[in-house]
Image 1 (cartoon, rainbow, N blue to C red):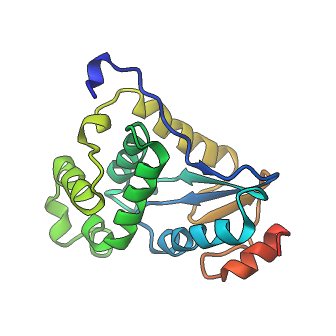
Image 2 (tube, one colour):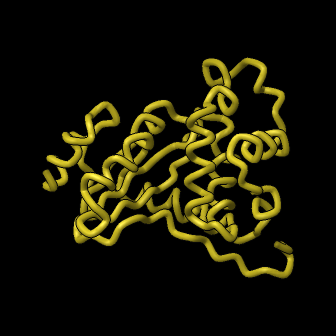
Length: 188
């Protein structure tokens, strides 16, 4: 991919085509987002892609200091040939190796010395997805701003947050079992 001669296309992080829509707002280094993300495949399997449309939205939060770089890398992965499956692989790798992408108490520890290039190298190492070149796509800024703006327009400031058919459902939690989610979605 030659970033200077390419018009980027981002693969939307959307799975399924059901009439019920669940949007899950995740922060890529948040432990509670990790819990929610780990249940999404099981949710889609039990709900079936014919009944549920799942949309992952990314919401970088300022206290997770490495989050903007990781968020941009996930979106960059969605612009690669593997599209949303590459983005999902990056998310899975980051969540599985969270300690490599966070600071102790959000402000200290060995990860303070990580550069953007170090973070991208860790992402590539853990996920197997080459994101460094796509990370430089200028269009990524538009995509990142859209994600942030969309969350704010819907009153979402924390993660994970669940939105069903355009309405935030505060009763849904990362601590819920998949069966509870299915009930709250009206798909049980």
